[in-house]
Image: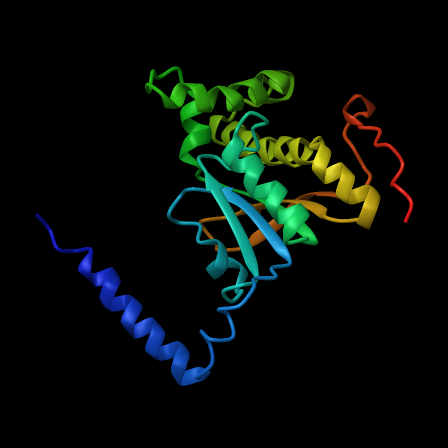
Length: 216
């Protein structure tokens, strides 16, 4: 059995010492209540470390990750994270970040039987079907693959806008703003491809009407 995992523990010790050398109260100041401004919904891919690519410190980014950065309305894990971030942490921005080279998206474009994950990847197949006219018109398979990665981010941002507790936060506090980003694993750069300001929805069928706020 390999002991390679021990390297992670040693790295942790070195990381602690580096942080303390820069700021002796680094950990004590972060041990209180967290107040992140951002929620990041990203892919589980090990090549896309949220805090590193955005250059933020611990406490600034609330993070949820899953295969292909999906916002699925029956995923209670994801829904719990988003609701907590919006209603309790009161984040100002929610970022869905996909990335080029996503294995989940490539698998969804294939006809391979992959077992249980077929159920998860079916959501990506639905996105392909929704945009089939555009995608099937692309002769280059690699460009079609990259475009589906982009369209997936667009759709997941829209899924966030469809959530009732996001809309309620919009009505009460005019936040959060929703963002769709792509991380290019070949260059390290992020680019924004979608942005939804509070109150803007992809279609009126998704709009919830909330009763007036009770008086004092």
